[in-house]
Length: 300
Image (cartoon, rainbow, N blue to C red; front, side, top):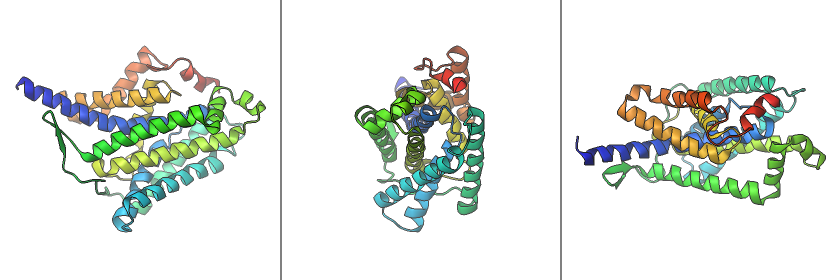
């Protein structure tokens, strides 16, 4: 193979990895959002992605609702699901031990997966690309317009989160709860409301991830578990609680996964993310960008 061909293949794998990694990054941000507020891992996060994708398919392909309106309705719907999950399964638990809460998220994940299967069936669902399927060529490699949508929306979400947590009172209150919930409560912050908001934002991010990735992968009821595992892997690699680290780690995991699938074997592509997670856990349990955050799971 010529050097030009080798470089083109490498660039193509990187584009593919960035596309997948952007989705993992969004899922990881959802994990961190809830972890920072409650100290638990929401194992239903992947189901938010599935609900977003399938709901968007129904609105755009079956109900023929315009893309922007369907986008808003879908995000609103999944956000409500996240709020209901927190209000009826997390909030009533007394005392809220980490193990009990994690088991509850597993139960909710199973419930949402079963509900999706009953409503949308077991088949994969197709959705049109946002702006056509004619790929762009960059230095011999091709990239779909939908991939550019994924990159752009990820950048917007990251920028919105930076602004929200650093320049709004609500965001600062959530940060205070993530650092010390007792002190935040004594300062007059409603920590329960912050927890509910974290579930709402986490579900909304999951919905957006599902919406933008469905035109590329086609969505079905069972994809949530794998997307959740890879998103969790990105969250751990980046350092639990560190959203910027989660974004960087998600992109890194996606690129390494694509390179492994391209140069080793595509049959093991899904296993590479788990392998990266295991290596990081052995070498640096707190994650590449983490410090003490990983230990908080045991201290909650």
